[in-house]
Amino acid sequence: MSVADGAPGFGPACVRAVLWGLAGIHRIVLEGWLATYRLGWARVTRLPAEVIAFGNLSMGGTGKTLAVFRLAREISATGKRVAVLSRGHGRTTRDEQVVLFAPDAPPTCSPLEVGDEPYLLAAGLPGIPVLVGKNRRHTGQRAIDEFHADVLILDDGFQYWRLHKDREIVLIDALQPPGRNHLFPRGLLREPWSHLARAQEVWITHAQLAPPERVRQFTQRVNRYAPRAQVRYTEHHPRYLRTPDGRQAPLTALHGHPVLALSGLGHPEQFETMLATLGATPVPCRFADHHIYTAEDIAAIAARLTPDMLVVTTAKDALRLPAPLPFAVWIVEVEMVEVALPD
Image (cartoon, rainbow, N blue to C red):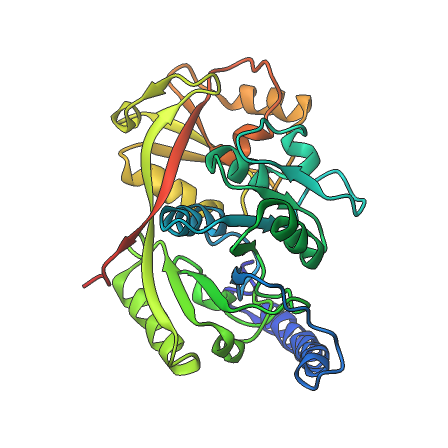
């Protein structure tokens, strides 16, 4: 991404010019597609429940899974019946069969079959059904019919236009480099900033890890493109360490240690920065987003370890690691908390 981030030189400048042209084509196609919905040519389904969608303008992770956790628990605490709908990104089941996690029942499928994010949601939201399927109109209707859901939460639903949504929440990562805030392929945006006007809320994530000036710049941009949206600031708050078999340790156990930061994330820098704030010295060990770890990967990871190094990973990555492992691994348990606008 060095070219997108503004690498100097004639060659990178030419590449950026080509990418600008492709981004322009992307926008023309996108606007034409959305026009079919605005003009009523494409059918939009309205379900008899409140529909709330979390999503991004950008590609890659911004913290949607943690945001769904937070909102689902908040709404459920009011007595409303909540269901979560996920497409199951990265799952190995490619048919249209709906994979269902019923409340208080153990999952019948593996994380690889249904996707690591919905699996985590099902495990962390006991009593709340999580339904996985490409067609959220069908899974939403099933949640209403079988579980009498009052509220449907769509994980990664900002670009799902076939279903009427009562509330759209867009997450913006404050750690995203400014050079990538352009439409793909010039940058990492799925939609231009002007489309933020559809959102009723904007959550700026990693608000305390990012430089305050950058957070203020994002806030000004949100106020420009979505002046009626409520802006909230959140942080990924680490709680404790645990092993795959459930043993726990305090976060202070990382202090002063070199740490192999094992991750398959859209933006691994976020994870590595968090480890640094905990007093560790992170050594990046990055794989592609939603990467399924193989025996060859594990051997390569083990070869990088020194006697004093700890292996630390995320809850999502831990689901994709094979067992048994030839080394100990610690998982950082994280929750999303709301914070004040940094000074």
